[in-house]
Amino acid sequence: MPGPESQADLSPESIDSLASAALAAFAGAGSSAELKEARLAHSGDRSPLALANRAIGTLPGPQRKEAGQLLGSARARVATALTAREVEINTEELVSRLVAERIDVTLPVELTPEGAQHPITALIEKLSDIFTAMGWQIAEGPEVEAEWLNFDALNIGADHPARTTSDTLFVEPLENHLVLRTHTSPVQARSMLTRDLPIYIVCPGKVYRADEFDATHVPVFHQIEGLCIDKGISLAHLKGTLDHLAKTMFGEGIETRMRPHYFPFTEPSAEVDLKCFVCHGESVGNPDAPCRTCKSQGWIEWGGCGVVNPRVLTACGIDPEIYSGFAFGMGIERTLMFRNNAADMRDMVEGDVRFSRSLKGMAR
Ligand code: PHE
Image 1 (cartoon, protein in one colour):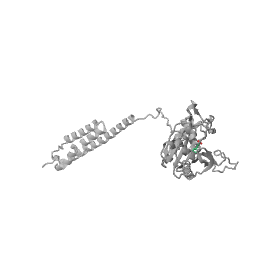
Image 2 (image 1 turned 45 degrees about the vertical axis):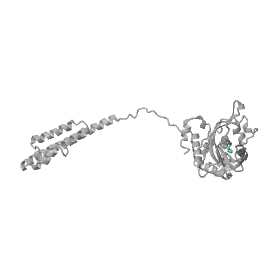
Image 3 (image 1 turned 120 degrees about the horizontal axis):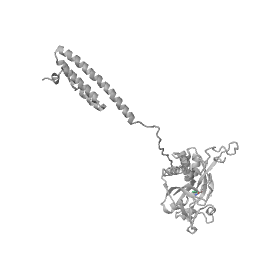
Image 4 (image 1 turned 90 degrees about the vertical axis):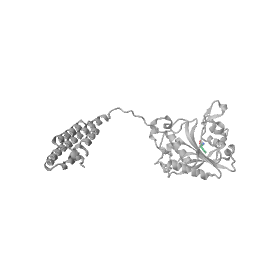
């Protein structure tokens, strides 16, 4: 059976018209997609020119030579035209893409200023994470607090100097006996009165004192309170907890010490100090190399702590014969000062975003 090749018309006119059709199609293609179509139709494997080429072998000798030459030059013209048109179309398309995608880098941009979490908030989150990682819970209490919970329940007697108006901000009318809490310790009393035993809580929050407003005092600041009540709790557990806290906050190398002190709600009580991480104690008795951070004391006071006074346990309905516990409290602003070299507490309340930005990410 004759193949398609045998039917191909290999006359010079026919070859010429195939070539002309191809050239016209290439010239008419306006995009690379259209040119691709034209290429497949006119110079692809199944195009009339390709089929004609395959049919040459069926011609008798002399005709085969002539048709072969004609066809060869026709296909060469078609191929050259195709390449030329490809270059043209690619260039046109590139130019129009460059125009369409042009960016004017001189246009003014609207800068959205980037904020930052307040360093005190960041530190509160970090502190809370340290304790929740040990299974402790976060407790909260009101900032306007019952005078009884802020003082009496904590064994702070009616005549204690801290109760006077020079330290404590009372809320009018006075007969309601409300104060702006002066420490986070009333949350200890609240937790003992309402929670099931054992208790492992920390309470970060705002406290208020009738204090000056200067580089190291602000009348509103933050503390974090810790309270643990369980069977068999001793001072050793307190020391271990504080050491863990100090190491997580200040790095493995930090040293702590407990210095005897007095708080009405803990017995024994101590202040917890950090070994000065600037001079490492070397400024002590060395007037040639004074240390501003620890005032050449070698140690920096960090917070208060102690074993919960049995009188407090009793006031909160817990049997001190069965349960014991420890508590601690430290200033968060102070912690930020030591930890991140924030020299002036006023920066922490003034709300200038540049301060927050300067300590961005510091609590990680
Ligand atoms: N509440 C004490 C203060 O504000 C700190 C403290 C907390 C002391 C818990 C002992 C136990 O100074």
